[in-house]
Amino acid sequence: KDNTQLLCEDVQNRFHQSRLLITGSAEKDLPLKIAEELSQAGVEAVYQGDILKDAAAMAALRNCDGVVLVEVCGHTYYRDVKHAKEVIQASGKSLIGCVLLGG
Image (tube, rainbow, N blue to C red; front, side):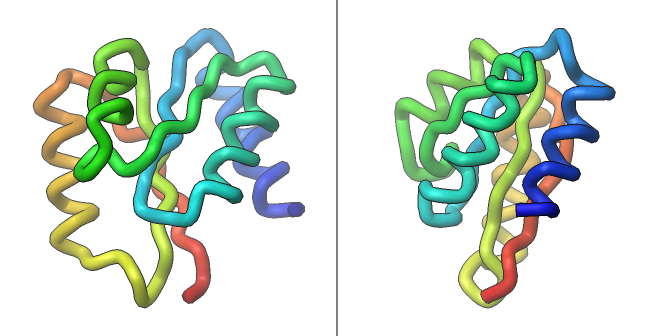
């Protein structure tokens, strides 16, 4: 919980007027919680599934200013994170950061 709060405070301080997409291959509980806490803190944030596998997440990418990836150590491959980064950059959006959860 402390790490989630730290992330939310950091994002709120730096991106308080941005619309953020929370996405990645992690199970939806933590990314959804991050999006909810950011929203409660006044940052417009929405969770969608993995932008590499979910059409709704890809559509949400068009309507955001930046992206936070939430991935799982031992589950997510480097090539997938690299591909997600390329997709984000090709869309003209900023990769704000990546949360890497222990496996």
